[in-house]
Length: 510
Image (cartoon, rainbow, N blue to C red; front, side, top):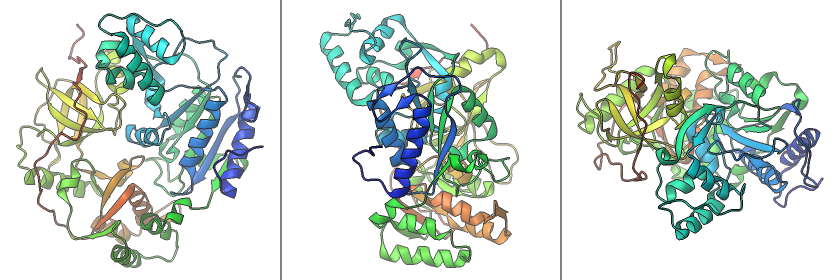
């Protein structure tokens, strides 16, 4: 077959050919663009497996481009046109908002697994606009308050970003203007790509296999397995021919000291003390690695400190709030939060879907913008969500050192629950990346002292590998239990200043 113009390594080319053959059996021929209607049996499941820097994301992006050029329609989860059932579709998924946003920044139209399970219901007027933007209809819509110049600008924006909600937000509309609700997906899809698949648990995997007759997983075998998975990942049980290994580390060719450190952890004889000496030596050679004497508090508002133990996480969060002068009975605008789930009875299923579809899924990173218009409501910015500004009933829990019950500064009767996000465990950080990452090394030393092993690897090495590979540009290896003073007050100026769409979530049905 003809490999794309991009020069692949041998293992990437082999994986590309294997996936191409898999897609051909499913009725999608990338060589000649021939597409036949989808079959219910599809081509099954395969996985592209490799450590950080091995080229998984590059391969995913090139496969997406080839499928799009062949005429396969991308299902993004933000809007689906009413086309014939024999069309071929592709959905590119990630377990978290942040992981999906990392792919979108690289030009890959990814969405979360949760978002693809639900489809938005559009207001009929704006559904006409969405159909026109997506090319489903040729007739230009006529919508009150939207001029021809605005429609032209919307068409140009959609051509550039391929996002219906993003385009409508860019011309001044809010999600609540054009989305009236959400519904559970009723039928199966076609082809699914899943990034960060090492985070999937068995139940999620089974759900995905029901939805996608052809499913391709992209995962890192060196990461931490999901909780209660006994150290195994869903792709471990696949037959060997269905596991496509990438071994070459491409980004190391750019002399990346962070990846050098991550891959040094594969040495079975490496001790924690030896690794710390390696980190210190790298910090002398390259300013992308920092031997930190204290936690930089300014970074914690957007890039949480990564820790192993919950006791460390709680202590750092309270230190963060103390140095910023945060009161016990309120949050300051700019404080980071982590969504810990939705506390709603089953009868409020529709409202649960509203919240979850807007990105408030368990583990979502959120920034507090200020109080909402009603008691217990918060205005929030969901990090990595395509339409990030929301207002929702909130239950905020501030955990205190040596206290079993968290302090709740304010709360609605029910709604989205949040923990503070200035520090998170390394397990919860999987799937996310930040430009700069602070790793609290005393916690990893404590893990090394326990002697615990997970899936044949010392636990501290798996923790260190995951923590280090969350850093895109700079790694700060914090070696002392100290906190720097802030250089500026907390702020929300770095976030998109669009108005929050009100998600009215009350305790009782109206």
